[in-house]
Length: 431
Image (tube, rainbow, N blue to C red; front, side, top):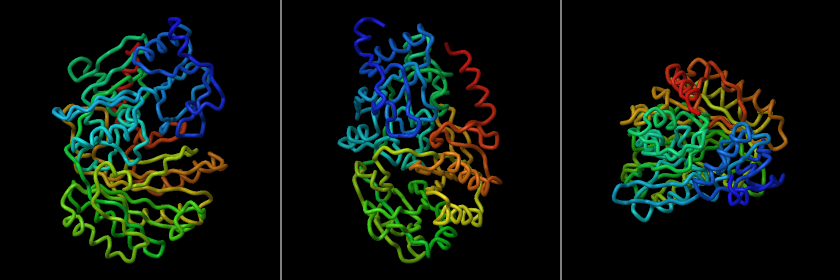
C-alpha cells in the first residue's frame, strides 16, 4: 500500500462494531481493518493482502456472514454507501456498502422500486450475490436476475467491469453463485421496477387457528396471481415488555403479503385466509413502496443467530404441521420457521442466465434461532430434526439463508451439479 493507504488502515479494536456488523455471533478477528471509502482503496487492500500472503474478507452489514476471519485484513465497505438512480433507464448504481434502505429511498421519488428483501438494513451486495428473494419475488423473479453490471477486484488486484458482454462467465457466476469466488465487489448496477405503491401487511393468527391455517395456506398461496408474494412465519414471541401485549408469549402464525394490484382485488384474494378464523392482528392496507418494510417488520437491532434452510419440490400438510409442533412452545429453544411459496417469475429463466438454481422449487423453508446464550450445537440439533421432517421433498439450499459456518450437505446442495462444477472451474481459474 501507499503511505496514504496505510493511513486508512486501522489496527483491530476488539469491540469495533465493523467486526461483527448485524450478526453478533462469530465476529471477525482481523489483524487490520481497512475502512474503505473508494474502490481504489478496496483494490489496494486486496493487493496488499496478496503481497503479504494473508487472507482478507469484505464486509458491509454482516447480516449473512458465515465464517469469521481470523487474522488477515477486514475490508469494511460500510462507508461506500452511495446510490445514484437513473429514472430514464430505470437503473440504480450502488456502491458496495449500500443497504436496501438507501436504494429504496433514492428510487421512491421516481415511482421506482428495487428487488429488495424484507429487511431494509440488509446490504445490497451480499444479498444479490446469493440470489436475493424479494418481497415481490413471485412477480419480479430472483433479485440477481436484475443485476446489469458489477465492478469487482480480482485476487491479483485487477479492477474489472463485469457484464454479460465483457466477462460473461464471471457475470453468470456472481449473480447467484454466492461470495466464495475470491473477488471483491465494489459496485453494482441493478434494474428497478415501476412500483410506487403496494397493498399488503400481516394477518396474525393465534395457536388455536394454526391447524386450519397450516392446511389452508399452502394451497391458497399456489392459487393466487404472481403479483401477490407472501410468506408464512411460525414463531413463539418472547414474554418481554418490548413485545405488544396481545402477542407476548404467544405461539402465532403470521401471513405476510405484498400485492401490486388494486386494493379491492387484494381484499378479494385474501378472503379465504380471513375465513380461517379470528385474527390477533389484521394489518392489511395500501402503502407507498418506501413503507414496504412494515410488511415483515423484521428486527433492526444487531443480535446473534444461527439459521439454515431447504428448497422443496413439494410439501405435505402433515409434515408442515409436524414442523410447527416441533418448533412450538415445547421446543428446547426459540426457532422461527418461515415458509416462502415460490413459483411465478422465480421459476422462469432470466433473460441472461445466471447461477441461481433450483428454479423448480415450490417452497423455501427457513429456520432461524437467536443465540441468546444457547449452545449452537443444540440449536443445530433442533434444526436438523426439523429439516428431517421435510427431507423427502428436499432439492437444495439457498445461499442467502445459511447463517453460520454450516458444513455442506449433499442432500441440500447450494447449486445443481452442472452449476456447481462450473463455479468450481471458475474459482480455480480466477487469480
